Amino acid sequence: MALDKVKGLCTDAEIDIRIISGLLCGSATAILMLKWVNQRRVQKKLEEAKKKRELGFQCMEKAAKQFKQQNPGVKAAPVLSLPLVELAAKLRDGSLSPESVLYIYTEKALEVTREINCVINYLPECEEQLHEVKKREKGLLYGIPVSIKEDVACKGYPNTLGLVKFLDHPEREDSVIVKVLKKQGAIPFVRTNTSQAILNIDCGNTLFGQTLNPFNHQKSSGGSSGGEAALIGGGGSILGIGTDVAASIRVPCGFCGICGIKPTGYRLSVKGATTPVAGMNSVISVPGPMARDVDGLVLCMRALLCDELFHLDPSVPPLPFNEEIYSSSRPLRIGYYDDDGYFMPSPSMRRAVQETRKLLQEAGHTLLPFTPPRIDFLVDELFTKGLFADGTSTLVEKFDGEFVDSTWTNQIRCYRLPNLLKRILAFILTPVFPRISRHLHALLGVGSVKNLWKNNVDRMAYRDEFIAEWRKLKLDVVLCPALVPAFNLGYAGKLFVATTYTHLYNVLNFPAGVVPVSTVTQADEEELKLYKGHYGDPWDKRMKEAVEGAVGLPVAVQCVALPWQEELCLRFMKEVERLSLEKRGRRKI
Image 1 (tube, helix red, strand yellow):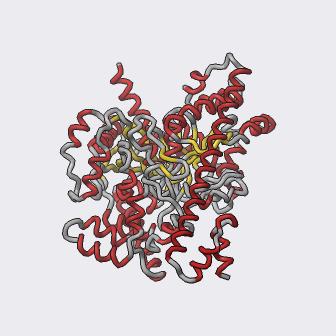
Image 2 (cartoon, rainbow, N blue to C red):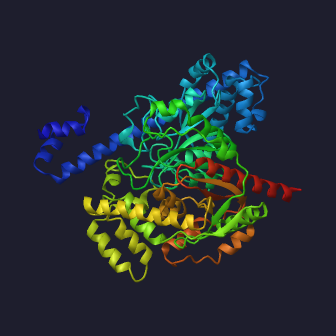
Image 3 (cartoon, helix red, strand yellow):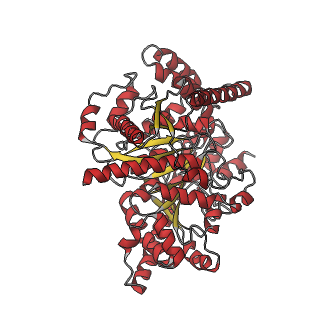
């Protein structure tokens, strides 16, 4: 039995009788040798994955080059400049061919990824799909190239989450989201990078490396859907699908200057979307669209919320896109806040909310101050303790036998601390760094099934309390900060806790989206020098360092609605986008 166990760990070529004998005798040397053998195997798989990826890029280059040679008159710039809605209209009326659009974006995606490392796989099947879409009725996304985050299943490709252990496990079928996109005529053409094991707001892993911000290569693209955001922000894709469990659509969209929405959990199907903590429902993970503008998000949601989705996944409520709500022009009652009291916003975050508030008021909407209740309780007891109810053990197991990417070093070191040490550190830090103390204590998890039930009850009670405050003010929507601007490289992995502005709405399971409204100014940078934070602890110091040197980078705001009101959320996002674009247009004049 022991011999069989060792054979399961090693290839035949790696088995050495001395290692086996040593293991049977409990030899420390043999254990170290076995560990070394495992590391060699992991390194070999990493090298193989990189070679395979490079071959895919060569296929991209060949396909794009061949199309250009056969169609020398096709110009890329006019196509790449088209907004999604206009591109879709031209494809449907025949003004543009699906071939020209696909290969123009294939070439552009390759150019962008060579610069900022955002694409992990080319999907050569897209070339076959070109012929299939022409045989069917033209859907809402007919001929639109779509990029897909790596944790959303595409048949034949593994959802690795940036982990070597999943490389040899290709998905047997497309995710429901990808199936519906294809039914609507879209053409998935590339898969994009993610953070290792997802639960991190940077975008790097040992399999595919670090994705950079398209506007500043010394900055992070954000994560975990950072490959998507960077590719779209860099012009290499016009529409993408990401996933969001704490901030994973909204943070990278904010960092890269694009739009994205996290729908209510289960408004879209999660079948085929992989999560690092399967079975965890305390903090809802959900797929959602990412695009250059709000109109692109709206078109994608219209396409996805169709009979095909409801047929393929009966667990999704059959709620088609509500055009009446989205197209309404009645003035809105909008709650707003520019500081949640847990993480002090950067100067540009606060300014963006206040400027947007003023624009909305001038446009005839009613703006009312709103304060999220008991934010410390939400962060520590509901988010952290709910997400890591098992004391982080399920997540930590994902890193067994893996090389840990530098973007994860800080987080994994903290998660791997023995529980006794976490308790001791939490006790010692209480008087000096109370926020960090509470976080360490929350990482211990709930401790028992009974406590998990209590945590669920507390979460529902908090949600009721939040909605009661919302209803008291008769609000339609809420305006609040998005986490911006893009962090300097090396900081995002140290500030997962800074997602309080976004993960609040995963715990509540409210739809929330981000819209770019401004850029960082020199005045913001000067004001940042005075930043102290709410606690004056190491996290506040890191936050200040993370956002330094960001003049000219995008700044976004977050728009929130009540559950199942994606259409209202999108309508609010569109209003914010329209007003901010008009303001910027006036400045240029």
